[in-house]
Length: 164
Image 1: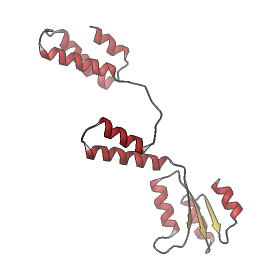
Image 2: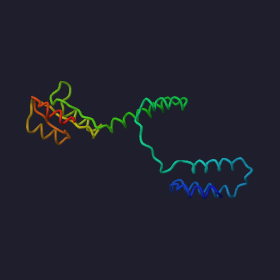
Image 3: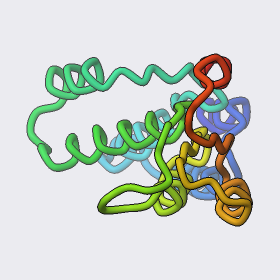
Image 4: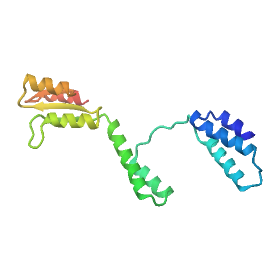
């Protein structure tokens, strides 16, 4: 059968090749005139046609993704929302951003912000700035992932060099 050879040539993973082989065996014993035969052939053709080992570069454009989902897929509002949310989170987690924060703030201190930011986006660089610099707070911030710990007053040249 041509589909069996096509499946072998397509380098289908073992998790898929076993069911495909069973379906090929079943089709070889089946009368070609019954409707179930064409369903089996369509199934095997589908398995063989899937693009395996082909990758494309990610295009993290949420507006384009939303437009594509709206144009090419009717309904499924919640599914489309989840796809866009997933894409947004993936984009945020892959950004190499920098956060400049003060150690002492009203509702949250800089260490709490540092821990939260590192949990959400481990690649984000965080620069801690404080007018209350101590050795223990500096060590704590650097151990928890701060890229730099700057005492006030800030040397703007050092800060610019860090951000670049």
